[in-house]
Image (cartoon, rainbow, N blue to C red; front, side, top):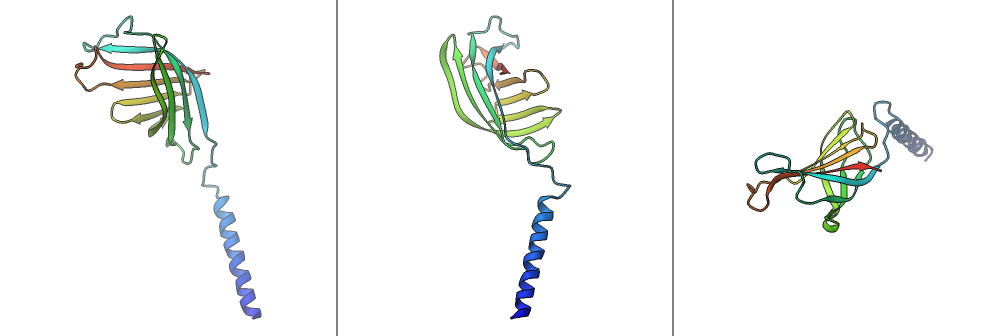
Length: 158
């Protein structure tokens, strides 16, 4: 009975040491908290089917955006993120994206890049003050549904 208690004590001690050493390993980066970026859409840039920036754009764009970037778990790999965005067209609600799961692409020098589907690229540049937000869409319908080939919504963080 005494030997089984001693063995059990050694097992518990060994497991405790493993757990403590794994959680305080110097090679593991510390878990960073989630980051929230919020801001206003300042304008939109629309590129015509001929490749020219439409000036003025087909309509004025305003709105808000919130980008929530999950906790960073690995260095230089963008963590998962989701976006909420409301776009106004000439003062009226135009698009509402209440919760979009984004696919991480890259994180280089403070510039996060994500995609949504095959046509949308989202970029957040945290090197600028305030951070700059870009939502870029490349349409693949050969201009049969609209008079522009791509659009970019641009915004600044609050």
